[in-house]
Every structure is written in structure tokens, then in C-alpha cells.
Length: 318
Image (cartoon, rainbow, N blue to C red):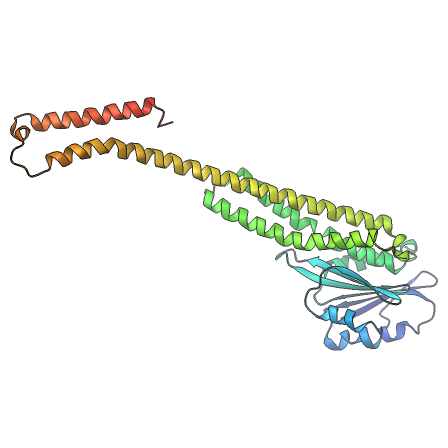
């Protein structure tokens, strides 16, 4: 689907002008064309109507590109990432920005573009006067703002694991912790390249039109810095939880081993006695005594009680 919105010289919005007629329409100040999940025929307009560079067009249609900005003769080409809230996988959003136009291109429907479009359509003439680079900022701002809900959801899940209100077993909690670490890593792969892109825009070779939007872009950059810091802090928390669970599991295993060791040690002399009197020798006088059996049982019971008491005094049961 292709939709268009143009700002006229008298600061009005005009919609649904065919792309091939935009350059010839009089009294247009600038325009915004959005390609949302376009067909191959619709995508051909990038080359036939707007005459964009073949390499930029190739980046639009091929697999995920790293966020970047390329400068061509009379326009800039931005590659940005939109985050899928369910899978946390990024989707590419491409934006061409010139002095009198902005063209957004995305192979999948993009809620962030919809929000920016609605905000722009409901704006004022003062907003429209800021030009296409401000529209590009609005797209960028919406993309970054929608990174936060996914991170907040991960943080909430992490808090629930830390409190363990459901009294889940350690193995289940450990599996969830590792899943969260994987989600944070996936989210970081989206946030950090976008942060680097904003850094290059703000601190690289100055782009005259972007200078006017520097305050807005700095705000977006600050959001990305905060996102990166939150992701890193949450990854550290998952590492602490992982270490705590491993230590707790190791402590429980050690306690079990201590009990088993104590029980085994207590039964070692008893087993020795039973083994001695279980041998088939005829010349064992105590086997023929009247009270030999009870004496041996008494000795075995005394040894078991005495060794248990001695181990307890040594603190083996603590």
C-alpha cells in the first residue's frame, strides 16, 4: 500500500496524491510518502518515480541491514529498526529524507509509522513548517519509544522471579532466568545499533538540516542510552540471580552429601561387625555363647548412638 500526504504553501494537508504527480503538483511545500508492505510493482516506484540510488533500493528489499545513514546527492537514506513486541525480533524501516520530501518504506505493517502518521496528521501548521526532517525525527522517536514496553515487561518478569511468589522450583526459575537473558541479548542487538546510529548523526559530520532537530535527536539518543543502561543492569541482575541459584543448589547438594556421609560413616563399623560374624569359620567361640547375639547387637547400637552424638558435637548436622 502506498499513501501520500503533502503540505501546501498555505499550510494545509492534502492526501492521496498519486506519487508520480507529486513533483508536478503546484503549491506543495513538501510531502510524505509511506510504502507499507508494498508489492513488487508498488516498490518499483522507488526507482521509477523517486529515482533513488539502486544500492539504497536494494537495501530496502533485502534482508536486515544494520542501522545506518547514507548520504546521497540530494537526500539521506536512513535504515532503522522496529521491534516486534512478541518475538523481540527487529524489522527494518527505511526512510529517505530530502529537502522537500520524506519517503518511509517497510515490508511489514508498522505500528510506529502509523502513530507518527496520525500524530503528524493531527498536528498544527507550526509542526508542518518544520519540514521532512522533523517527520523523520517523529518516526525515529516512535520506533525508540516502543522499545520500552518490551523492556518493562522483561523487568516485571525478572522481579517476579526474584520474589518467587509462586514458589517455583529452582530448576524452573533457572530456565526462566536463562530465557530472560536471551531476550535481553536480543533486545540489546536492536538498541545498541540504533544508539550508535544516533551517536554518528549527532557527533559525526554535521548535517545542516539535522542541526535544526538536534534537541529532538538528543532526546531520542538519551532514551537509547537509558535503554542500553537498563538492559545491562538487568543482565547483571540475571547474572546475580543465576549465581545465587547455583550457590543455593550447591549448598543443598552439600547438605545432602553431609547427611549421606554421616549415615554411611555410622554404618561402616556396624557393617564391619556384621561382616566378621557372617564368616563361615567353625572356631569362633562367641558364636556359641548364650548371650553373644545380644551383646553384639548392644555393641552395634552403642556404636551407632555414640557416633551420632559425636558427629552432632562436631557440627556435622548444622
